[in-house]
Length: 464
Image (cartoon, rainbow, N blue to C red; front, top):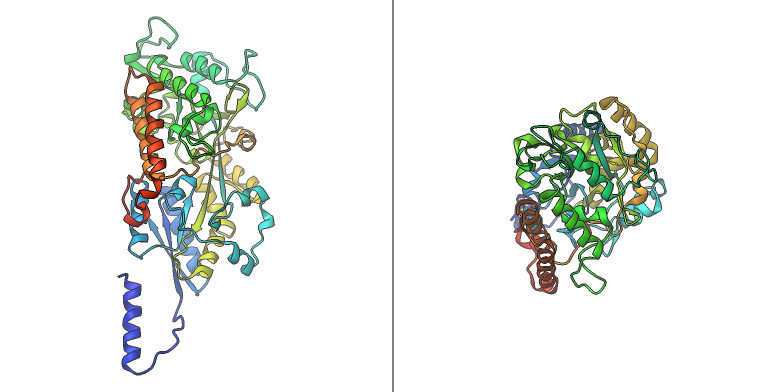
């Protein structure tokens, strides 16, 4: 039994002994707990900003005490699952995107009644942005931060190799007149991959066992994120059966050959090594191009003044720039929905919003905050980053999103993760055969989804 329920039970017992059962009124401020860990929020500068937001909110009024719980991302799903299962769930969770929230489908509060009763103005947002948070559970979130993806590139590494930069806008060709495609990215990625003797990956003398600089990485994403560069899809069809489109088969061929034959993409061991900053490859300064999201501005390390951004390349004439979006959600177990909603709106649209958006690296969903957001980023990165690319990337967002819900979600994502570990760390695979094996396993997991016990109820799973 939770502490809260224990003291409630004791109060009822004393009331019965005294022969009366009073109507319980709230005595003092309501406590609202805010759980951080399913998404961003674990970096030191983010923790400091979040603690400052809590302090400022508590100082601004006397009716609510906001408490924050910050959990490491690696164990956040398990921790939250356990809190829900034991009846000690927090009130608010976030920032969290689709990937983090999917494991807790069925536990989110429908915000629509609270929006109506509070008069919160949804017309401030793009209608499609609001609708993207409408599910079978209702309106489970409100727009807050968007994180378009694009190509980060290091100007100095291009300059040192005498290679022209990528295009500066969607629709523009590469410097040699060729279209900006995944094949073109591979071509220049190999030229930018160097061994310890200065040979690039196209030269016969190149030593793949002595690479000191790589051309490309698709950083901090899973196989669905990797494959999104070749088109928006998900490994499930309209009938709920496991499958992958031909474009994704081409994607995994491209990535696998890029790692083990062309050598311009680091393998798993290389990506986790000291030379690539133990997993933060682009920030190591030894990778020329990285595909990732706007939130990565939080994590560039010492690479602060010699990088810029470029459009995502196309595949077969189609450009897909995968999109992340974070917000805060309220669990439907909250005992204080009105107070929780007051805190939520403070975080996403009140005084806290600009500060949190900045440290999370999220482009504001509120248009009036966007200019100041990029101006502040320019103070940190004064080299003249082409932020228009980030804005324009929204037009190429993946639909369906690469983090969309899948049946038996946590076990399915675990199996997809095993596939990633395999192709990033194992040379000599028949990648298409491994993909077939993945699809066969996903089919079984989809078919047994209703038979599996809930991960949220048990609190078990990988936490990935």
